Length: 574
Ligand SMILES: [Zn+2]
Picture 1 (tube, rainbow, N blue to C red):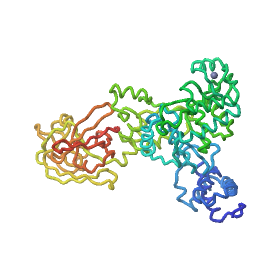
Picture 2 (spheres, protein in one colour):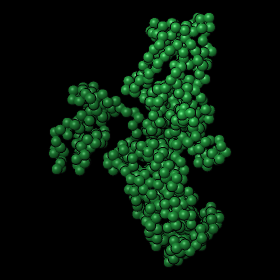
Picture 3 (cartoon, rainbow, N blue to C red):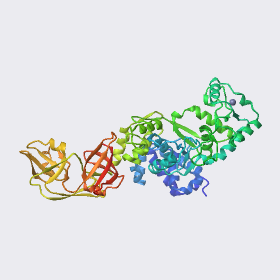
């Protein structure tokens, strides 16, 4: 047992010193004891029972280290642990959270299964997820499915596929809020018994009207017994939808409209996708949310500022009445998705009108669409780290998504020749060759492409049209030729010899060994062409680069009645 700082072992002491030096070097000479503690606890889980003592020691060592000049810090670390010196500060790391302790942070991802997630959802989910990871805490994935009119199994399945699987989010717990209905009823009854909630029989219009005026209805003064009886009757299906609601006693004079006796439960006879007709009274969002944060043990809520402080006041009031903890709420600037609609209703209309082919249309920024286009999961992580908790609104447009994704796929995408509008050419005197080139110029591990060539090739029509008399050209990685008297004459094989004199490098395909291919663009254009036979080695859903064309993702392979294959790609980006 380590009870005082004297009991910390020599090894750990030295380790603290090394991390303190490293931390100081990364932060203008000033080490932060908590950051150092985090490093130590990350490495030595067994020391977690002694956090207080350890932090004290980290503070002592950090203050010693902070007295050194930056050069001294660097020299000492260089001597003790040069590998730590090489680690550069990761500028994309998320900023620290207030009230956050290693191992104790719990965040939540609360999708309502009523729509398909888009990139805005993905980023806010990821921010919560990454913070749980950063603090070695937990992340709860919570389906907020207490609106039977909106929640559907279809969307639960889509969330699992688009969010959990595609984005590779591995929550510590997955739960359905509708499984907590009995708990909600129990808490409602508690509020009624304590005089904080009442059953209201007014019409929606009347409730709205009185709330705007800041006046209470007569239902507010009903006795607890009356309220309890009517609440039970609500649960026992004695009323029609809309005939009764349960309202919270807030403050009818509050400047904050949502505090004016909001409805917290309503009747709905719509069968629930998960529970059928088991329940007919459902909690509304703010009540459900306030309760769930407690049930999930959430410590930090990271959400977009558009949520607004009005609802926070209401949810905090509910938490107070129920004796629940409050969470640290951090609001970041909203994401504006530029150039694509994210509104489910609008997208549904576009689908009906035939303007888009479905939720995965390449014009859209739903996760379904982005996945089908070949946007890599790493792109979202990168974007989430860049945006972090910036208080300012962030505009996210296609160019940002594409530029991040391009850097990621460029390193791993195999290269292929794709030729639209192919025309056959003959290069007089061209030797037969077996050409072997890498699938990726810098990465041999991605394998090789093989070509058997003769003197006939396919090139793009526009390339043929621009060839000028007397000038030298190159078929990429293959040979050089010259145009003379309207004929194409073989010149040499070596690239080096012709370098500097070449007018253009052209991509090509040998006349045999080609496959049919199409590329579907976000503009709904279907570009037809041919692709090299090496396409056989490409896996479904793999992103490749068609040279001088752009990045594309292999979507499907179709065979016609003659068993002739067509490789169908979706355009990712330039
Ligand atoms: Zn009323």
